[in-house]
Image (cartoon, rainbow, N blue to C red; front, side):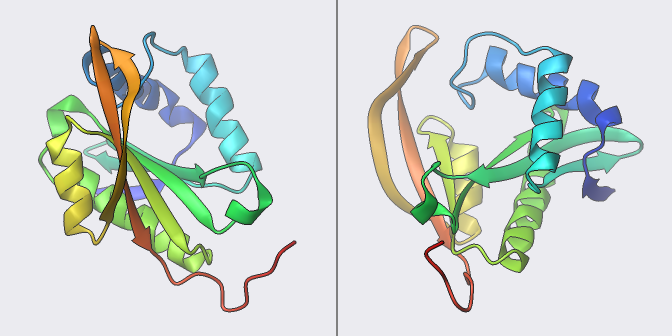
Length: 171
């Protein structure tokens, strides 16, 4: 098992994992699968912006991935990030998500961020449990945030305090 930065060669697996989440779960509030070209552009943009995308690889196969990016586009949010973790359906419950979550937390700490935020569908007890056991605290619910599978979806927010920069600035 290894966790490493994603490479363009990982796009097929990343796309497959993400599209499974779109088609079969409420983890992604979207309706239609994405193309590999779309996910490749996403990966390239992340790298151009200096943002990480990690993959969990086992026996030569990508079992999951995690990334983070800005929480909101306004300048004063620059020390807050929102992350995502996606695991291949055959690898769920095997510690892949926890290992990836710890990796993005550690990376964000080293980069000087102050707050990590998770937006989780309220009907996803596995993700909620994972975040609670990794020191994320519940901070609120947006009711009827999405509509998918002919039902309203509530989005719960969890956050984890990080060390933040020693000297924050307003630039």
